[in-house]
Image (cartoon, rainbow, N blue to C red; front, side, top):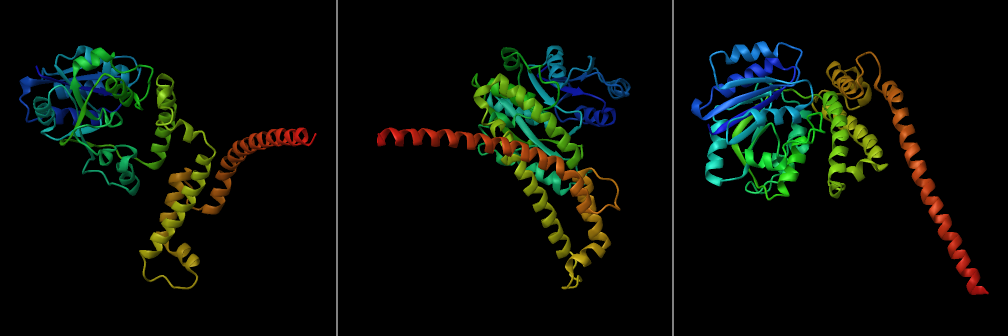
Length: 361
């Protein structure tokens, strides 16, 4: 057997069923690969779905563990896998029929390398402006890859990547201190890169992400990612600047939040107005509020960003309710920083004054 596909899963039985059917319907001959599903303590009907999909398929194998996170689940899958090459993918990823064949072709042509394929939004999804923004490098940075024959470690996404199992065994697998799906794959790739691991990008090996992402949901994920990046930094302190630790703890980061919110609201108003050429030139603000479509768009933005569900509330009142805590935090951090600056300046001033007095004597 050449290839083992390892799929960790947790409470996504419906999407998992579709992903597994796609993995069983591949151009790669069945005898060349297996699928290893590791259930990370699901409480839904995941076992039943796997049994139904895999009943006639001996190459689909199922394992279960207590909920310990995807890093631990992948390590479990690797230990149970029989293939020389391990391919990782997600339970919300629907593969192209040539996905596995493209990965094996890349390994046959390039030798002992890591291979990342492309991840695109599934055609069934309505791709929002926010989802398009994530494609620019926030969630998947394929557009930032300059050399497909030598890809940076930060692009080693376990939604669609493969490597020879010896690399995993020599590096000790995924670090199980990472309890969530955030940074654990990149941290592994960084350790592998220290051992001379080379990654190549093959966009023809494509899978489709069947998971709509909202701004609210992604903000919650980013908080988890922030916690995970501190784990990463403590293990690899030399990456402090690259990981954004210094930037995130600077008061300027809070100011950027204000600027981003105000700029986004302003640009949204302009775009709404440009979409309706019948708006009267006078009293633009009144016309904007009176137009149902534009009012709905603006309130939708407020609900999405501020988590406000009452469409009757005005944006200004909501902002007044939400902003004081941010403002207080900004003032607290800034005042402490200004105090330190003032204290340093005072000390320097006293030193200079002492030097002047000594010279005068």
